[in-house]
Amino acid sequence: MLNLGEIVQTIKSIVETRIQLIKSEIQDEFVGILSRLILLVIMGALTLLVFLFLSLSLAFFISQVTQSPYLGFLIVALMYLLIVLILYLTRDSHSIQDQINSSLKSFIFSAKREKEDE
Image 1 (cartoon, rainbow, N blue to C red):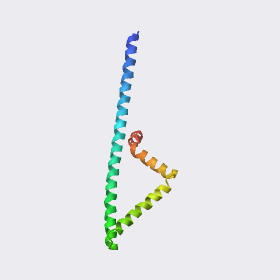
Image 2: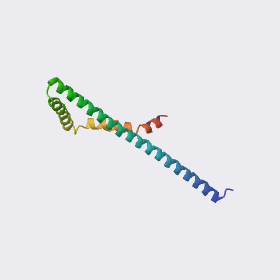
Image 3: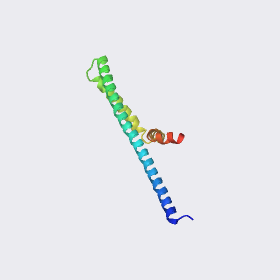
């Protein structure tokens, strides 16, 4: 006959092992999400720098073409103002918000889906 103490000890060790396994999975998931968020911030910063230099290049080019030192920068600024106005007018669009949400979710939580597909 099995000793009740041994059964309790076996169940206790199984539960402790399962808790450690769940802790490890949570830590791995957190580190994966954090690393993708850091990558997203770095990509955003580099994209911002690319747009900055492209904007400056376009402004200098338009200034050179128009032979006016300020007109190129004014035209580029007006282009950005137009983009801001378009974004402001479409700010309540649920389709745009859904697209952004789905793309961010797929980027940030992609490792979970990859593990599930395996």
